[in-house]
Length: 454
Ligand SMILES: *Cc1c(COP(=O)(O)O)cnc(C)c1O
Image 1 (spheres, helix red, strand yellow):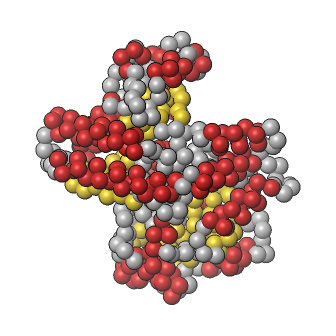
Image 2 (cartoon, protein in one colour):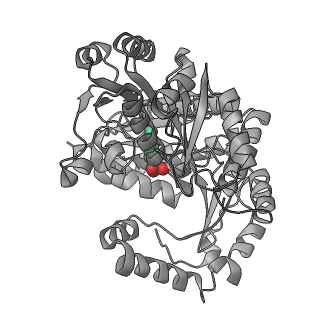
Image 3 (cartoon, helix red, strand yellow):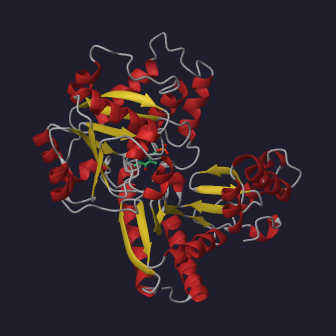
């Protein structure tokens, strides 16, 4: 796309929720250009800073694929430096459950800024306590003790350490294609070799089994197993939905072997999959659940695990400071999370995720039927939908073609043949329809340009 084109030829306004042209002129004011002299100057500055000071190869890939500069966002819409608007169907990989800058979350964070921003840690923090209580009430079964961090990978680190300390056993069992984060411990439990190999040796005593295969798991468990860590639906692995009953089998096998069951719901939790937690789809209560991405409504980073008190006590009853975080659960993050959980429940976004998810799935499947040479499979749970391409080569065209048509989408990290559609849970029927039309046109364009790829 013409990333630095004039604003006038890229104004996209429509009746179904995309920003109007008055938003566009606002977005092109000096304020919205972060002080740059022009849209082109802002783009050049950002791209050059990425190239020179951050990540040269990433800067190149983003430029080639036509990535613009995001300058503002609200609801399901992102506005770029030229004033063009995009429906956000990448959705921050699950961060923007409430869309961008939900007014109630923003208000809660602003109010908290005027009281205390970061905790001093030597005194009680009322919001952290309230959030922990709220999570105990919302999460399934008897999950009740929360630990707060700042990201998904830290939540996973906390859960893995908890399991080892509670069981006094070494071994972690994880699944192929899993994604649990990129710090050393979480990476050790993740499944894509390309991300792991440069850092070997990783954590010892990690065993990997195929995802969705209870028999393989049975064979991997033993008296040395501290934990089984599993995503109820694999997100970055390519939106993989396990066979019915798999999570119940994992639960039973953990019970039989004394291993801690860790459900990594960093991406699937809090409504994403059309249930409050993806574990609820099978009525399974894990021993530890990890949360992050959507937890604070896309405004302040936060991560958490919620554990059964018996597991937590077995690890930390006598040593309260064994696992801590300076910034984890700070007041701003907790204020955001409390407001975000209110919105999630009061606006019944779980139901919307189910309904709009069904619409998105059906529409993407219609495109698959029109272009069977390009799309091999479409699958999803709620508003986590994966479009599996017959060849990786199509993705590099479909994603930029979508962007041209005003829709963001993203690959899954561990499976480059799968494009994920993961819009905010507040998405409207009209917005889903608009994105589906763009998807159909982008797939058509890719087929036209590339033909049938081997
Ligand atoms: C994104 C993700 C993580 C890692 O979260 P970060 O905040 O990027 O560290 C862990 N687990 C799952 C399932 C994820 O999708």
